[in-house]
Amino acid sequence: MLFSEVYSCYFRTVETILTEAVKGGLTEQRLTELVREKAFAESVLTIPSNLKDGTWPLLTEDLKTPLRSVPQMPLTLLEKRWLKALLQDPRIRLFSPSEAGLEDIEPLYAPDTFVYFDQYNDGDPYDDPDYIAHFQTILQALREKRKLRITFTGARGKRNTWVFVPYKLEYSVKDDKFRLLTAQTYYGTVNLGRIEACELLDHYSPKAFHLPQVKMDTLVIELTDERNALERAMVHFSHFEKETERIDGDRYRVTLRYSREDETELVIRLLSFGPVLKVLSPQTMVDELRKRIQRQRWLSSKPGQAEIQSNRVKE
Image 1: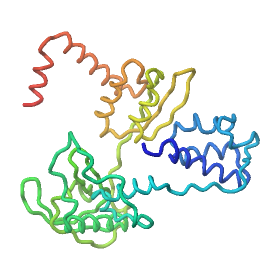
Image 2: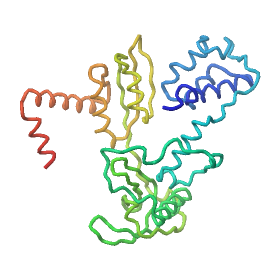
Image 3: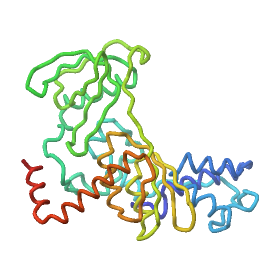
């Protein structure tokens, strides 16, 4: 993280808090609300206390500030170069982001600086003019709630032309592909790389269609902060909506919401923490973890079984 010590999300949050303090009227409730809105859920454990106890001498006991003017945090040259580098990514360029203010900035790195592994090599043709036009038509349809007539090649090579109600774009890191999730009398998925033609149609009302909802579950875990476990957990689960609270000493309870589609990946991540992490709920997750641990114990007690299982997976 290039800017974590200088211009990170936490500093932006404190900037917002100090701006309200300069204007007057900052309260403890508002302080907590700003931290929840601007920072991460677990930030309520650190930012308010550091500001109120004088660790960061920016607020007085009555939640006023010695600052006389609103703080300003202009972008550094390093930040501008990093942003310019991000805008070179062909996947980001599909969304037509503005480069205003970065015209004469040299990118921090080139797109080919990084080599991806554990990813298929037949990703979407992001630089193809037809693909870009299809992508932007789909974006317009999603934003304006409009139907699409799409001609595409199916998985078996058959050419199809159907009318879809689009409701979500999905990107797969593993496949390096975008997919369009659609709904009408059925739900379907269209790989953008297979689209041959894409036409905007009339508007539709979301109320007229039962758009599928992502099924969410709540996971509650108890964590002992040994071997930097808390920080590792915040990184591992950073993209989940979550709340973190200290139980006592170095013990924390983390509550996070996850999609059932992510359950397998989540189980693998939970197992990587070993004995410093305990799953409290749901029971289905507890049972799955117990089953996997018992299976690993059985395999470790049977020399050669792990290799046999691996060969079966490959077959």
